[in-house]
Image (cartoon, rainbow, N blue to C red; front, side, top):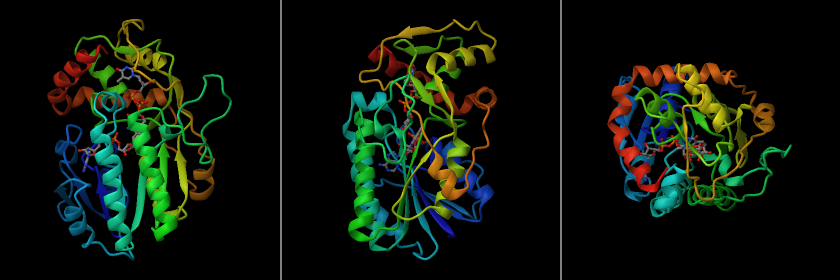
Length: 336
Ligand code: NAD
Ligand code: TDX
């Protein structure tokens, strides 16, 4: 492959992917991003102009997508599809944009990809499988039944089903990956870990939903992205691969660790009202990914990865400060 068309490359995981791919591979990169509230050009500053280009546009706009895919060479190039409306809380307040981008946007991209016989990789999430009980010994695998809970996860599930059907009906050369919760630099302050870090940095208290006992399976964003590159290189067409790094922690534990790393008392947080339909626990079994691609995670010490992430937010207030007040105002409106 020589050129990657990366949708959503101005968002959290996409921007980290673009940086990772330019540093660790010889691919050129074109980013297609609408620059919604979640997209930030500052996340793509300083990239080499001879290997990187940014195009502002909507993945649901067939004319824009058609023009870009016409530039790609089927034998060597690929589309890596990160663009999405990604926040569960927003999907509960206004689901429409989730259908437009996650469902119609993905449809528009796979139509263009199959017409040009382009390799396609679809970024999905473990949330399509619903949730697990706290004491369930099982984890999600590629064979777990789809049981999405929220408007966000149901639109991601719908997009997965479209991709799988386009493989079978039209021979689309696609793979799908479902990753667990990511953390790391350039994540929007609406999400759990950056919200709490930036609250403490501003002298405000972290906000835990419900009892704080919900469990997420944390993975560093660089490990997610190295797995995506491994799937592009070694994944089998038509297959789904779950990506995870055995990082299960409950939210209370994460908040206490953030407070401790920032020199605050471990109980200096507030419990706030719960998210409706709040998934209890996610956990990934990544055996298939390890076996078929040889991928392994680099960030195996969560506390160390979190400490690095805290340092990034401390050093990059100019990146997150412009979004912080508006984000907290939205949370205040819904009482969380
Ligand atoms: P994000 O919200 O930070 O970024 C999304 C990006 O997509 C933004 O730059 C935004 O401008 C862009 N975008 C939105 N609608 C668009 C449209 N119609 N056309 C073009 N661009 C558009 O999201 P993220 O956290 O980086 O997630 C990226 C992908 O990874 C998503 O598909 C998400 O479902 C998936 N995922 C995320 C996580 C996580 O923990 N964040 C975990 C598993 C999977
Ligand atoms: O202020 C908060 N307090 C809190 O307790 C926020 C913002 C969240 N939470 C809880 C809710 C979840 O149990 O923290 C956990 C993580 O919340 P989010 O960061 O909103 O992530 P989640 O809903 O788990 O979804 C994330 O992981 C899977 C991403 O946003 C999705 O895009 C991805 O698919």
